[in-house]
Image 1 (spheres, rainbow, N blue to C red):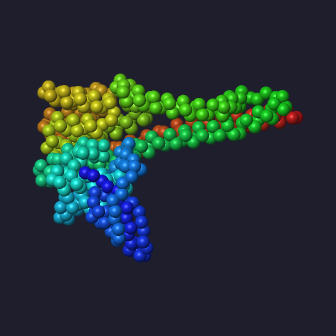
Image 2: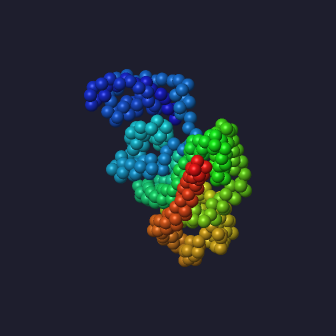
Amino acid sequence: MKINDYRYKAKRMKDGKIVKGMTEGPSKTIVDQFLFDNGMRAIEIEKHSSLISRLNRITLNKVISERDLIFFLKQLSSLLRSGVKLNEACEMLATQQTNKNVRRIFYGVYYSVNSGQTLSDAFREYPREFPNILTSMIGVGEKTGDLNEILDDVVDFFEKQYRLKSSIRSTIMLPVIYMGVAILVAIFLMVGVLPQFEDMYDSLGGDLPGITLIFMNTGNFLRANVLWIIAGFVAFITAFKMILKRTYKLQYFFSSLAIKLPIFGELVKLGNLSRIASTIAQMLRNHVPLQDSLKTTYDTIDNKVYRKLLVDAQKSVTGGDYMSKAFEHHYASEIVFTRMMSVGERSGELGKMMGNLARFYDEDSEVKVERMKKALEPLLLIFIYAMIVVMILAVMLPSLALSDQLQ
């Protein structure tokens, strides 16, 4: 689908003011509708093409955020339940988007659906924006005729996962912020405050305390080599990312390390096991075969350790064994997870049991995250207090020594 740039001249309906601007759209008709929905009546709409506009369409990262996707799916479900046709609903939702990049993708979905493709096939054209579990579940809903019910289930699934990820992210960001502030304050002291003592002591011929010298020499080094340090840091991060992207063993090592870290390892384990249970439960509840469910779950997980566990589970199922065997006695799993999975497989109610397990993690996640926050608080306070004491000593000791010399 081709998206064009359009230069428009329109009258703002609230005050009658004439406005000009640029926007995107697949046709003049849809651009006219977009302007109308935003309180403007089009006077002129002309197609416009430039190199800058083409460059602006290049995106390197994911365009549609999780919150935007959830909101889009909620609106789509509401429109379909109201009797709006699928292609019309997609057009309405695309037209109301204010973000150009997001609007371009939703226009693409609308054009694909309006051309006769299924919604799941339209989503598959944008694999970076629409998760595999979403396209798989939408496909199931289209085959069974329960698209509305599937959309509600998917929205509920994404909302739970989003809340859990947000809780985990906020817990991880807490120590990062504390340490970042402490390091910035330390750099300010080393670069801006302590060098003043050096000139005073040089004039008096005194010796600076050891701790002050360490801070001062570090500050002098930072000031003298700041450009090299920044360049080296950027080069190191770039090289590390390139090597990590191309080296599976290194990826697996860091994935394993993340699980084994004190405190944070529990967060990593909680997030991954919760997603595995929720995804498998969602797929099985909608009659997706177990092998396909495991494959879809594999695509939703980033941690290489859990990906390997899912591959091992697929091999076990293919070989006629229970998939719970892959998770038993593994450091990345939990007893309650493997036992409930095993009970579900042996009773023939794996989908129901994984659903219970997903609900268990939903209820347990808030308690665990809160407990981890409380465990982090004293550690962070100790770190901050220690930094404060060291900084105070570095600043105060030279002053005390100077007063002694003056006496």
